[in-house]
Length: 248
Image (cartoon, rainbow, N blue to C red):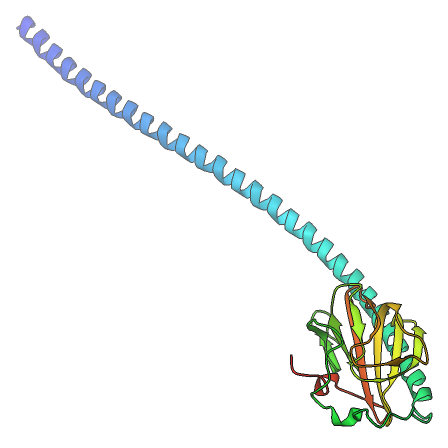
């Protein structure tokens, strides 16, 4: 009986040890899996931390660049306002100068010369290049400003020869604040052409020119870009030069 009881007790202990051993194995397996998941999450956390740090640096860089851009725009806006004010003043003085010239008796055109007023859409361009700024009211999309232009600006490389578009006589050739060197040609019958933003002159007052005669060299506009300012006046009033020039 004692042996039987001992045998049953040993069997019970063995079964209990088996259960405990199985539970230990399960716990060890779960612990291993938990550690693996924890390691994965730690890697994910580090990756997220690195990503967050990178995004923060990118945001700080973007903010810094935005501040620099705003400062640049404010500076450009201030420069633009000063440039526009100077341009308006220069154009007013230029109008006054042309008005002083216009009432004078226009230099008679030779009999063989074709009248300027009959040459609509037939006159040659003073040089090759795209129109950078047109005639009339022009709106600056970046700064939202509107200015009035009595002529057009043709983009061209500095030093390019600007040529007269019709025969005539030079009635003004010299520096003019806000327009560089300026040449005004009288074509008779109260018709004039004006060439501005020139860096140098090739004619002087009283010079007779033909169509194609170089009057000066392209310089810089007030905004720093190279180009030629061309103005056409008929009966003393500014008109759109495109209406008188040949189609490109």
